[in-house]
Figure 1 (cartoon, one colour):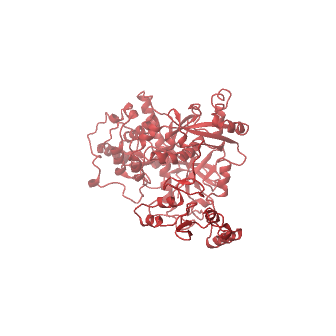
Figure 2 (cartoon, one colour):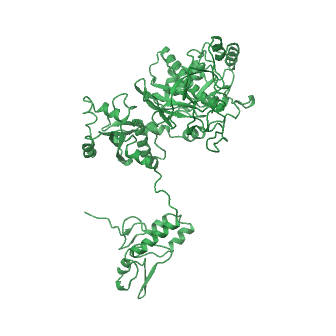
Figure 3 (tube, helix red, strand yellow):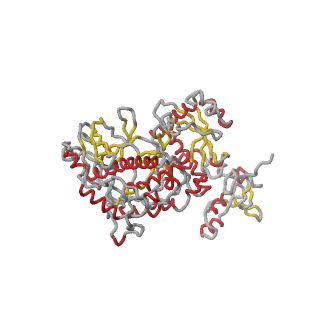
Amino acid sequence: MSTENTSHCNDCDMSFPQREGDGPCSKCVKLAAHPRDSADYADIATWDQCVMCGITRRNNMHPTVQGDSRIITCGSTLCKAAIPGIPQAQESRPATHNVPRTVTDLSALTRQRFKRFNHGATSTLQTQTLLQHERGGGEPGEVIVMVAWQVRIKKALASEFGQGAKGWAASVLLQDVKAQLTEQVSIVWQQRRGAPLLSEHVSIRWAGNKMPVPNSLSLTVGEFYAVHSSTDNSAIYVENVPSAWKSLAAVHKRKGGFMALELYIDSESWAESVDGDIAASLLGSKKRSIAEPAALSAAKRPRALHSMLNQSNMRLRSEFRPSGLSGPAPVVSRTRTTLKRMDCIVDPRTGDMQFESSFAGDFETTPSFLSDNGQSYVVKRFYRLTEDSENTAPNTLPFTVDEHLVQIQAEAMRIGLGQWFMNAFFQHARNRNVTAIDFNIAFTDAFLAEEIESPSPASGIPQITAESPGITWLVEPKRSTSVEHFSYTLVHKSRKRDLRSSTIYAFAHFVWGHSNQTMIFADLQGTPALVGRKDGLVLFDPMTHTVGGNSGIGDFGLEGINSFIRDHSCGDVCNRLALDEVAPLIFDTSSNEEQEEEQDNSPSPGDTDSANGEGEDSVD
């Protein structure tokens, strides 16, 4: 059996008898860091190099003269002793390369370094973070399931992208595990393929390329393991362990459990998504401040927005009535306590919205809180409303509470209105007997929560009084951190071809027609989750562009509408629903004029409530 000669440097074709390790020698490593035509390269090339160990440095090399020869060494005892005719007793240099000769010298140098530098923490990870890592992302005492993984592309395992095993708490969502593993694999993937790997290009499978039980991918790690370790499924999934993991599996099966999984990479969908649209989407995702103009002047309107004759017999028409933001929406008050919950109620016929207030309970001052029924939530608020507004001091806001209330209500309205349009979209598909569509898509549940007694530290306000109300939060159920984007603020190109993506692109097209050409949805993004007990997608944080440009933060008005008309291309679902016929991507001014006239002649939601004798409670 041959062994590699570690004393030889292939870059300079030199051998160094006392050299330890392999690869390029010290001098070649230093030269490789600079271009050949640079001054640094020329300077390093003149440095002396130890003929025994290969070390090179600008100064303090030791020449030894033997007859007519001049031999250069680093000065260590080992290197000089290796030269014939040099007695070791005469040497006063250390026996090893470039280290202090005694423990005393080493200690002195160490103390000196401590005096010179004010060293901070040696890790950016705090104790709580390290404990979370040890607990697999869960709570103390929680069951840990060991997850071993390999990478598969098409029919073969791809060992070049790594493999590994880690324990995860039973309460962690499987989609979060996939997101973290994808991020880890993406490092090598990007080095080899030139673009990052996203979670949407990866799916979870069991060892041997076995598909999981249907509708189990949105479960927690513990639930996923329980489903596949049942009596009927255990032999197919849990007991199917590759030889590489058998010893590890034997240990952890007796503890919290063991799963041998694969990350299946859809290389074809990844290749389709890698084009200029990625850069364009990032450039186009900037939100507009509410202080910017809401609409373009007539002279600057994009050419794609042009008038046409009204063909009402061919168009999608609805009783949808768009509303702008003139102030806080009406709230029907019922009770008050520490936290006042406000739900956005959407009229099923017209899409009109109002907020209904009810008792909710106490509120924890953390990024998430736990309700009485055990459901985990996350809370959100704005930290700036314009590009130039930032918090300047603790317990201060760069805007008023009323200004924030208007915009946070707009966020809740967009979510409620999004589900209203989604319901109409699915009904339109059923009316046309279209079944090749992903019905497992929904907008997130959400409500508003106003602090009404004492402010939380995260609210940014010092106190709550009758004249100074508390901050209002947007509250959503806690979901996976894995996010898939389908459009951006001003970029709407249909880059993906799978059924779910085609359904969402068609939904965005449908909204344009069903809103009577007054609105489009932008920045559509979602997380994998159960929708009606099936693996689906929950959309959140949408944006809207409206003719009036007044639907909230990020509404670019006609510019935003034009970006959709410019970018959208109909796919399979659009064609099945005949959206190019019933919702043509052209701007019909006559239909908008008719709608504006209808709105002028109809009572507002607030007037209707007053007429019915219901009291209004305006939120300050």
